[in-house]
Image 1 (cartoon, rainbow over the protein chains, first blue to last red):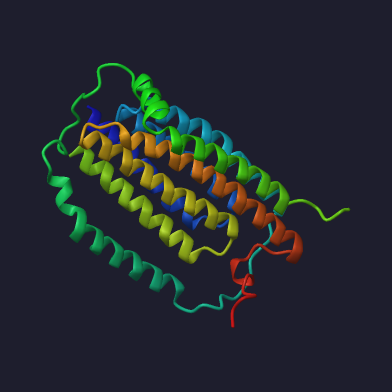
Image 2: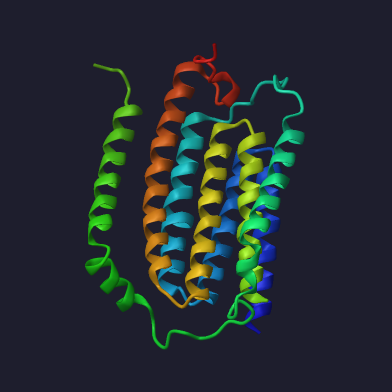
Length: 167
Length: 99
């Protein structure tokens, strides 16, 4: 049952990501990205990472896409240049991606045949929020504080970059 | 079969994001493709932490989400500044440092 749900969510996510890349208008692409992030949150829920699923919905689908929509409003729907100065751009990118898939499979494909990769075992009895909180405030305390400092620097830096030169 | 399906989804999403970065020319779509690649990495981390029955991968996903939010804010502010200066969001117009 869970395998079918994972398969359907993966299919929805991959198809909508393809449509998001080939969409002409940026607004349509943002809508497809909303479907991608919700499908990813569904995969997280099936994999019993409930806290990460909720964080995915709040941060990505809630906050980040709204920021992108505001940037799209501020920038405006400007068409790009007519002629592409780079010839054979799509061909070379697809060749590069095929090389990447080959390297990935030759290096990490053996990991997929470990015992436990074939079925979804229930390894946590209750919710994982208490475990995450204990790890985050005990073992990962220094990266947690560093992440808060990085977010503060990002807020100040983006406000400084995007300000108007009025004074 | 299920975790193999999840890992395959992660790999395909990463490759589609890479194609989006390499071929699209609107700078906002390029930034969204970077977010797509980070999301693929998050899926892989969660499936890996499920594979080895360890919860450390989910902590790493939390830090990845924080860093991706910071990166999106800085990239979008740079895109807005560039669009205000030059009037376009084409990524081929950012070639001032080309020799």
